[in-house]
Image 1 (tube, rainbow, N blue to C red):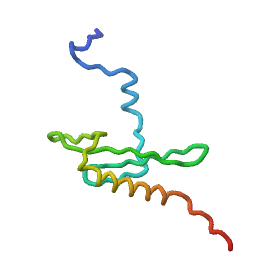
Image 2: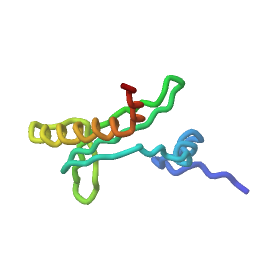
Image 3: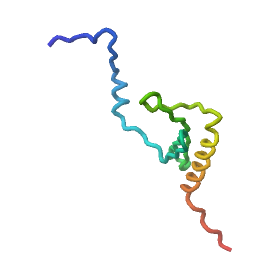
Length: 103
């Protein structure tokens, strides 16, 4: 069987790109949204215990396609404040309750 070269201008994927596509995607432990601002909380297990990282993004629609950005406008600040407050409360609720102190 004769091998054919890819068409000129055709994009080919490397072995690494195929591995990335096939790898299962990690999901956030929790997500919070206020209008166009979304926070994702990521759980990290370490030998020192569990901690959470937070990512923020602004969602917007470009034509028919939803996209995200990491830049925010002044009008987004109240939504950022809201999702950060909810994120802090959610993380605090994940912490084990402290043992009651005996009197």
